[in-house]
Image 1 (cartoon, rainbow, N blue to C red):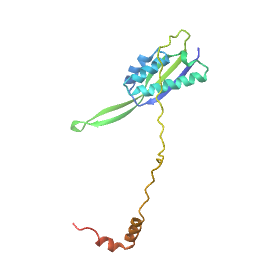
Image 2: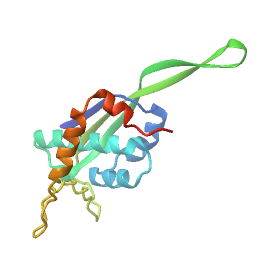
Image 3: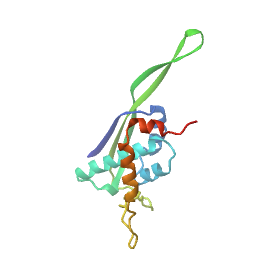
Image 4: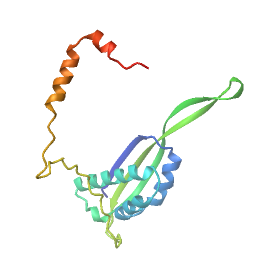
Length: 168
């Protein structure tokens, strides 16, 4: 059978934390998995949802039906580890391990897949509206006298500016 695969390498979340979520998703239909990720309050949920959507796009390129896809395998492996040190009492130091992980998901088509009764809606993209001038409102014009006064002050010279300052 054909499989659509997507990978994330060097995700800066500890593998133990990512595995908590991936164990729940294993074997689920893609639509149900994405719905589960939308309501999950974990930092890795958004990243894993993006990875699953990438795997769905790969499946479409292979000619698979996106409605019949389910998560066949999802694995989380230990990645690299940054080692840092924290100063402790009496001149000693304790090691801090900042762990990374590699995540891989494989989607497969199933003919006997029971579809959930709900649909997953994507968030609407934010569109910035350009600031348009309101009809009937004129823009403020700068005062001509103020510009001329500022130019004359600049021409007076350095000593004039020094002695015109307020005294304390």
